[in-house]
Image (cartoon, rainbow, N blue to C red):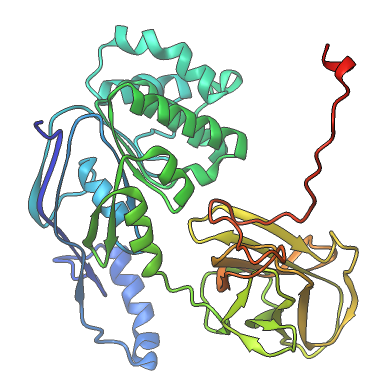
Length: 426
């Protein structure tokens, strides 16, 4: 079958460092004059320019009707690849062949004119795709209904919230019938109900035989939508094949380590910063730190924290969110759910969650950590994907049999068979 997308030796180089312009505006000259003493004081007056390769010798083909997931860590080159495929960015080397109209949903605002209304932007995007006015009008009502912006249809887009903006952008991209639909990680902007609606629409688009390139950090979404996947790392394709194999390859390269984890150097954290989670580990029933814990055993999840001002905290709140390696949620437990918020906490301490019988099947699990005050309403330190721990097979049920690998959770209970009297079945 002839490919609908062909990418050959695609490379994109970016220049970083001070901009070397052939000329300067009066404003730039004044600003540079004012900044010169500070640059000299900082000692970086002669910072050299350098270059990085966001993509390097990327080659692949996609056949019509294929839904391809593109996964990789932040900075792997995923968004750069989609921007080149969408003809927003020019490649440095290599080339692409596209045999069909491309509809793109890359980031909130791409392809929209903020001064135009929602109605006008629908027609503008259709025209950019090369559609006739009659074609746009035929799908217009569906777009408006899907985006749920009826009331604001004739309001300039600059007044839309990010959620409204994203809803309209997705509706336009999915309904204007491009042969190739390119979607970056933007669904996180919307609420949960609309995310489900978008995923359902993407499944519908794929079932109609259109080609979809889907970038996402949600492994369950990639698994449910995509026929195949490619893994990008450092601007190069490290794997191209089945979705399950691609996800395993990606997760094996993850920088989330199991066992004791030093959190002090973690960058992807939010919160007030008045205190910091400094270390995470898991303990066995003897209180000994371990990297792996058997299913069904007694253990504790422990985290160490530090208040920078050296003062105690009131109403300290702690939450653990546990996920499978593929990103599927397993459980969330916090101090408020158990009615155990700490009314007074020392400036430096350890918070442990004791688990009398670990109800998880064998595998690796990722933990989000969330420290807050005032019953969880004031975030202090919030770290996504902070650490991981491994669960080994164990005798959870006391029968010598390990739990099923088809689901992460184990449930304790008893099977019971009751006889139904004959007169009831008659």
